[in-house]
Amino acid sequence: MFVGVLSFLRSDATLAMIARAAQGAAMGIGAVLVIWQTSPIDQGFYFAFISFGILLQLCDFGLSYASLQSASHLLATSRIAALPALAALALRINAVVTGLAAVVVAVLGWWVFARTPGDAVVAWTAPWLVFVVGVAANHLAAPYIFLVEGGVSVTRAWRFRLIQEVLSGGALLVVLTAGLGLWSLVAYYWTRCLLTVVWMRWGPLLRVDAGSEPFTLRRWRTELWPFQWRVGLSAISSYLVFQAFGPVLFALRGPAEAGRFSLSLSMMNAIVMVTTAWPISQAAHFGILLGRRQGRDLSLRWTRLLMQSTAFAAFGSLVTIVAFIVLRRWAPDAMGRFAGPTTTGLLIASAIAHHVIACIAVVLRSERRDPLLVLGIVAGVVTLALMTLAAVSGELTWIALAYLLCTAATLPVAYSIYRRFALRQRDAWSTVG
Image 1: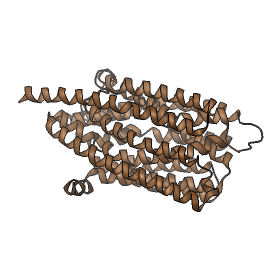
Image 2 (image 1 turned 60 degrees about the vertical axis):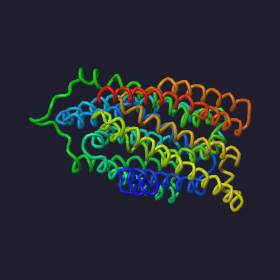
Image 3 (image 1 turned 135 degrees about the horizontal axis):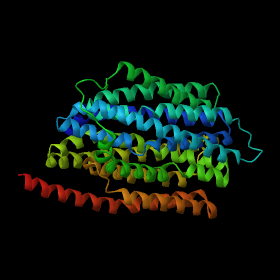
Image 4 (image 1 turned 120 degrees about the vertical axis):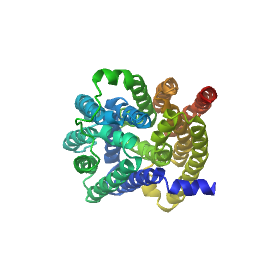
């Protein structure tokens, strides 16, 4: 165990964890500032903005992650000359779908926010429009960063993400401290956008030249799309599980109630975001090991990853629950902006199950397939449906309980799918041997 911890501290996972920790810290401190600097109504709008922003970023339908896996396979099979052409094609496709998605999300958000009761007065129109444009502009370069991670350097990609998280998080906190509320999210995404522009100009070059191997639209349809659409559907199912309920509760019970639940849910999401950076940072390595038919090394590396990172996730969840209970006694008024302790505890407990599923998903996707797709879609739809039913007929605690039960129910199914994957790979190793 000690050797494994030392290895982790020297690995790419270190940068990934620090980057996600920086993002989680910024969002966590931002949540505290939202409590101190805004009203409960503003809080509801704040988290609804975040949910809609994440929805917009789903528009590439798995293109960025599929590009990462394809880049790692190109690297493993000595066909890296095709990477610049793949980057050019991915950026063009992403630009088209991002523009269309920005219009759809802008209209959808406008419709939800315009239904807010008249006594909930919030100046949301201008920040909403600038926010949507900023999210879209930032997302235009998403495939580029993933391609650098998969085909150039995992370390360089995560080093940039760390810089991006620190500076954009700083912008968020400065604007929140100034009392500008929703404009803080505008500053967050526009800072990320400007940093990406600078990095693409002076960072790793992925430009098509005379020595580049072509990567046509037809090749994308045959090599990326069969895996990409599965990742895209999986991302949508994840959105249903992690983010979709905030706007739904906003529409059903108003911004104040949605803000309380979303603030507690954001604590769980922060834990998941930080802890799953560890397994996610290994995606490119898993793809390379599988591409080189080093399946036994892949299995051993994944098992260590699962045990060590899940222990870390459980510890983080326990610390968070204890801290929440202590702070609720010391600052009851501020902590009253969260959902109750039972509701929050149920949500945080769900983070451990989410982490295990993320570990399983990363190794399964190293084949450029997504065996968890059907499970994810069913779980997402059922979870959202049961939570919506609970929101109509019960308290927030019942909503959180429905969430935890749905999440825990996916664990045995996901692990059985992994076992079939492991047995199939073992048979393949025997054949190769």
